[in-house]
Amino acid sequence: MMRYFIILVFLLLPSVQASTINEMAQEFARTNTVTPQMANDLVKFADQGDTTAMRILAEIADKGINMNAASPEWGFNWTLKAARAGDPIASYELALRYFQQRGTPRGNSNELNKTRGIFWINRAAAALVPEALMLLAEAYKTGQVEGVSVGLTRSQDNFLRFLRLAAAQDHGPAYYLLFKEFHSPENSRFNENEMIARDYLEQCVELVEPNCLYEAAKIKLTGDEEIRDVGLGLAYLQQARQQGLKKAGLMHDVVVAMINGELDNR
Image (cartoon, rainbow, N blue to C red; front, side, top):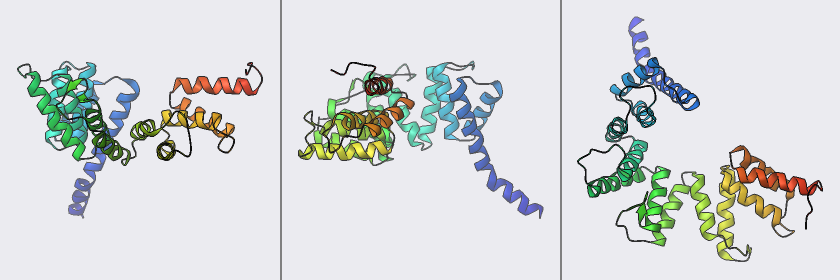
């Protein structure tokens, strides 16, 4: 009986540890502080190979919070360790550190940092990390990542390809950029590009992306009679406001005031 109990304990340990780390991550995000016990536990889990703990330690290091060793260099080292252990999110974060030269080894040249950044962003993109796919889309659109020229030939096809890959991961910002790419100022529903744009917008609204909610609200409030729906437009604006989009809140209040006759609608 004791043998089976010991086996059960070992089977449950990883899930218990993951739950503990997630709780610490939530506590850190909520309070922006780290207790000595939390710091010790995170270091212990990271030393045992937990990459989530490593990434949390890297974020703490960036903010220089309550830890003697906190520094960009310390954060870089934890991110590098997590990326080398196969964590795709760490791969993306490591690429950013290389591009921004944040905590990178002092002897690194700009060219070396760029080369390694490209390596890690491609690895993260291969794992379909949405933010990495968005960065590669940006690189094909502008030739730069985080303001660093990465030597990629600009390509509209590749720009759209990586945006669509990011959107396929249910990434709202990617859908929003796709909408903006195809949206025409004339808002003609008979324009093929506008029909594509509206399809992207619809999918984006389902993800409660605030910028898409705002754009959908404008269409519902100002579109022609067939698609106009003031109630739904106001609901979209309220949702976007709850997501922190201030301009949505302002528009919501203005429209409500106009409906109530508090503003001169001329």
